Length: 118
Length: 107
Image (cartoon, each protein chain N blue to C red):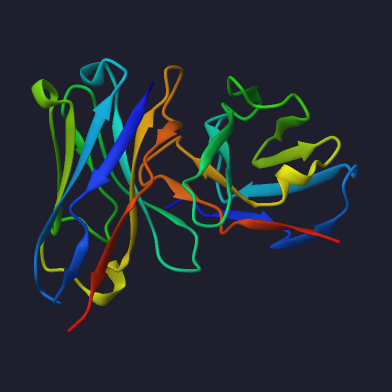
């Protein structure tokens, strides 16, 4: 079964750091682009980062310079290291797989919750 | 950044109705447009990719189309399981952007 399981969320103070992990199973992880998408409570979806199967990272301006996406293919794992966290980063963070056909997101994890508050 | 504008924001409909949700891009995105369904407390689920291609396992009552920068998601005959929030997303260029969502409610 194709599966993504996020972990690492929690409560962190403003200015703090956190590392999210996403464990992949049921597919050849190294072949796929991987994404992070977040959703604040009651709000819409926001793209956070993408890493290509070759390792190239992409970010929106809102997190560029603060967030770092990485992958460890030998461990079938995706990571998101988040620094200088702000209240506006509070959200459920989902990892998602790039589809077989294009750059849409065809498999999603259940998400992990990040709360930035003092 | 490419802005994706969905309409309506909320849609009330009945089981068996045919419904259409529209997503307009602020600039051309080709056919690099996906539609997702999300239920409360759950992760999104891919319905349509490349504007009109049905994701495997998704019922055929869902369909997508495009005309320039306007994209539509159509549900031909609403089922009880379809009441959810729907999002469009462009992946033609970074930053990827989503529409604000359309909440489909039971009338």
